Length: 389
Image (cartoon, rainbow, N blue to C red):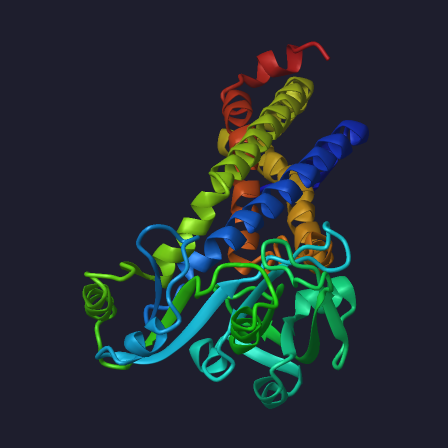
């Protein structure tokens, strides 16, 4: 039988040292969970991508627009159910630091194209019928306080009004994203609004559409449909490149650099440092508890019991600190998402991250306690009792 009271007493034989070690584990596991959650958020657009959506862009570059008449041609391809245009707007709200994503899109197909978009306030039909309206994500509502009916002034950068005035859109609805493929920090408005402004020479910017998002009809192979679309424009006037949604989203992750690797490297470095600190703590504890081990063995406790006592001591210390850090990361998830704003609008500490954090916490305890526990278990009780304090 394992003497759990001995474990608890030994653990807090030096309360200051134990509390400092636990505090370092709190910080380490909190950072590890937060960094992993950031990586998961970045990768969500790839890992959660739908297999029935394709993205059509210029074969030359994402920054080269496609002709407006391509929409009808793509829609006529066998296996295509819906087509939705997306054009990056690139404006800011009031000040340059208030930057978030805005896209002009097709109001009639956007909701059908993205079933993960849930309208939580307002009326999508109002947005669909009012060309000067927009829909905004929940993250924008939290960050900027947008309300239904508000006029949102956006100051253009590369698409600017020639009269020098800001663009204005009325908030008709608020949406929430139920998947990582669509964030909640975007503003959508009518593509026809932008198209007409260009036709009437009211603004700067190149005519056309950045990308066409395609919904593949049930029973059709997305790769086959993508090949048909590419073949349709093989001879121009503008060649296209059709990719799966996962592949397209992966391009954006790679465009901002190898941030997932960078964040993972930081987390690994923090974890390694804290493992060394806990190992050092347990080595010091093993030296101080040598005579106590001798007493336990003299009283008849086996080497296996001694081994378990010290190993469980290390795991308990690790769980007290690391478990608290994981719980803290989970408890502050909403607050951190609000603080990150539109940079990581879908930030969340998932259950998988919590499980990984707890597993890592136990592993840290095992690594820190295994060697000292084996050393103490092999001690001769006479030699242990003669050990100096």
